[in-house]
Amino acid sequence: MIDPHAAAPIYRAGPENAAYALVLLHGRGGSAGDMLGLGREIAPPDFATLAPQAASSTWYPYRFMEPVERNQPWLDSALDLVRSILDGLDEAGIPLERVALGGFSQGACLALEYAARTPGRYAALLAFSGGLIGPEGMALVRAGSLEGTPVLMGCSDSDPHIPVGRVMDTARAMEEMGGRVDARVYPGMGHTVNGDELRAARKMLTGAIEETE
Image 1 (spheres, helix red, strand yellow):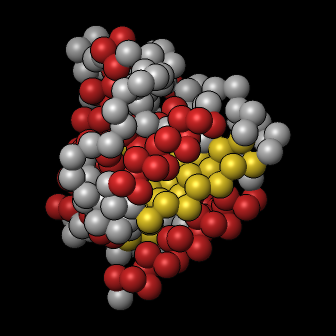
Image 2 (image 1 turned 30 degrees about the horizontal axis):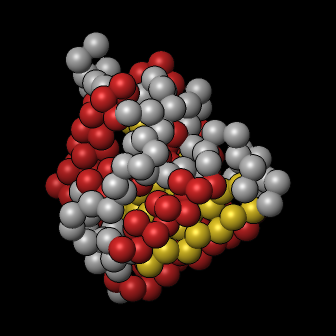
C-alpha cells in the first residue's frame, strides 16, 4: 500500500461554526470514537473535535522507536493525512494558531512528530503517553520554531510501550524548539490517561482561547 491512510474517514463533534479545532489521533488498535470521547472530556465549547480513523486501526506497523524507514510508507501517509486535515481547517477559516493537535500513545507520537516536522504556533499540543518518532540516539530537535506553543506531555514512569526517557528527551527537544512544555510523569500509572492530564488539557485549551481573543 503506497498511501494506506489516503481514504481515512474523519469524524467530527462539536459546534458547526467553531472558531477553534481540536484534532485528536487514536492509539494502535484504538478508534476515532475513542478520541471523540476524549474530546468531550477536554474541549471547551468553542472547539470542534476532529478524529481520523487509521487504516487497520494503526498509523504505522512497528514501534515508534524503530528506524523511521521501517514504518514507511505508513508513517508518511499518516503525516500527510494530518497535513490535509490542518490545511482543510485553514481553508475553513481556522488557522493553525486556533488548532490544537494531540493524541494518545501511537497517536501522541504522530502528533508530536508532525508538529516537530511542521513547526509553527499551534493553539496547543497534547501528548498523552507519547514521544518523538525514531531510534535511540537520533537527533530529536528539528529546524524551525514552535513560537511559544503550549505543550502538554503526560506519561507513566512504567509505561510498557513508551519509555519515560524518550518522553523527557522529547520534552526537552520541544522546549529547544520554542514550545512551552508542561511534562508530567506519573508513578506506576501504566498505559492510560488520568484525570490530572484531562484537567490540565482542558485548562490549556481554555488558555489558548484567552490568548487569541
